[in-house]
Amino acid sequence: MKRNVIIIGAAGRDFHNFNTYFRGNKNYNVVAFTAEQIPGIDGRPYPKELAGEDLYPNGIPIYPESQLPELIKKYNVDECVFAYSDRPYPYVMQVSAIVNAAGANFVLMGPKDTMLKSTKPVIAVGSTRTGCGKSQTSRRVIEILTGMGLKVVAVRHPMPYDPDLNKQRVQRFATVEDLKKHNCTIEEMEEYEPHVVTKRNVIYAGVDYEEILRAAEKDPDGCDVIIWDGGNNDFPFFESDLFIGVADPLRPGAEISYYPGEVVARMADVMVINKIDSASLADINTVRKNLIAINPDVKIVDAASVLTIDKPELIKGKRVLVVEDGPTLTHGEMDLGAGTVAAMKYGAAEFVDPKPYIVGSLKETFETYPHIGALLPAMGYGEKQMRDLEQTIANTPCDVVVVGTPIDLPRFIKIKQPVVKIGYELQEIGQPDLKVILDEFVKKHNLK
Image (cartoon, rainbow, N blue to C red):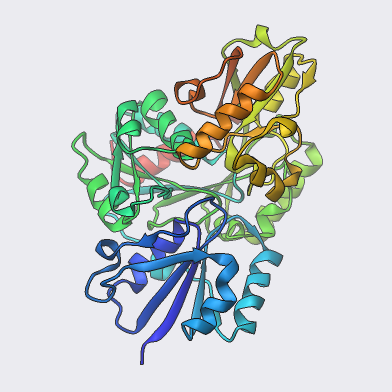
């Protein structure tokens, strides 16, 4: 008899778990997905073309996670698979209690049933929390490898936010024009744009990671190495030959108290302790101690997150509105980011609180994440929310807008105030560094 399943997700790991384990598996009937974390991703179906028309001729509905107990009873559900990331352990177990109380099993799927094998060497980059510096670490790895003359293709953890998921089955980004072609949200552009603009490498993403991986391996520009550019604090979708994790000493203890961040910390061959230039020595040592306790053989790289600022002279003595990376402030739970650090460093007179001036869907964002404070997350999950962000910035009485996201925000929304753009890159401190580690990797796999 088939077992009825609900996959509890956030438009990423949930779809991947389905595609790799449940799609075409006649022992299971996935009756629904539920959605959490990302605004506006419920209410659309997982289409039959992706689900497999033989078993799912009508596709699979996606409901809000708040309806989980009712859905378990409605569909006589046997198992609920928890499939999203960057959650503290008490939250995960609370969902487990909700599922068990409704009568179903609570399941966490692991690498054996969800990782895909590549024909190319794979370097995976992950992190213990959202906002650790995983993306800049990926860019640093790519910079080193391309400097060796290797052709590198990156594959990014999914962000399929389009209402029609079929359009996002396999996406390839090689130019800024490709971002427009695929109707990317701000959150997607924050991850893809630095690759195609700064590092000049191709990056893939989408929904069906078996197809995405095979396309990346055969990229028309060539491929020597696949980089898995992980999202949130998830573990990789691909089997890796070298796994690099990133930890954040500004949030010490997260590496052993968040799911699946601790999985990353335990699996990693290398852990980068980032932001040592802005964290206390005590917190850095706490993170180091925790990492060694759970992964004694791990190599540890110390690093700083170095800011780049295009017009620092505009900040001094001014009232600033700081716009930070959205996910870092929201489910990443940070109360500052690169823009905040830059504004303080260059002498801003005042941080203008945007809360009295927010409009539309951003009101719900601040209600859900009250810790954000006098900062504005660059929320842009769709065109309407981008317009809400644009209007909120316009409403806020500030002298300067400090943009701490890695994209050229004024290219997508109108900002009437002067804009200062902040970037950030990884800089290793001491030895071992990533170049030494990657030299060993390249020699081991005969890539030169």
